[in-house]
Length: 224
Image (tube, rainbow, N blue to C red; front, side):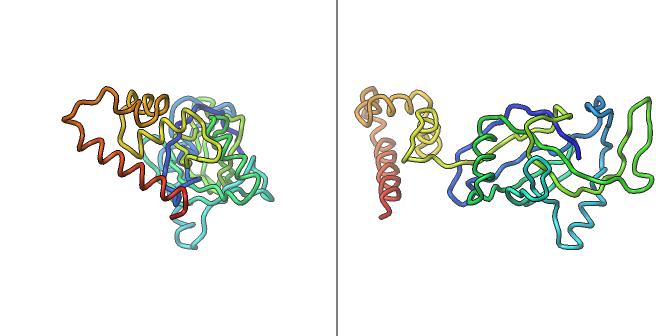
């Protein structure tokens, strides 16, 4: 198992069907050795991912490498030029997953891989261990890590009207209504009158579209 170093993340608002999904680099290729003195070669996961695909299996999504504590599922893994880009989903009905989701949104977590090395899968190069082939067993969410580049890059969440946060509301207004940052701030501070007070008559059609979107959102929140 390998702990990775935490790094800042970015989170996005999303529709309900993608709430809890996230993307991050479970591992990166090349560069300087990590805190364990390892470097992962490009394509190190290719054979392992192919084996999982053929068997209909996938690496586990765990909390802190604890095999008794899964917190979701991995949907996809892609080796790109940077590393192993991983997309997964928190199972938010599980208390630990719900806590992990909140921590991920605050940038408190990173990713870490659990693996085995097949015979001939590693060699020493200039004092570092070069991992050329890795059998990927699991990818965990961790707080402290060895590879500073293994990080979560996006976490999707929903705006919660029962527990509103001003910054989240402002972002939700921009995303759902197509408002600028300035317009969203005016809507927050002054409601509809605050939004329209500086608008010109020429923008009446655009305001009508925004009003219609607000009505649809209100009806959805009321369950109509």
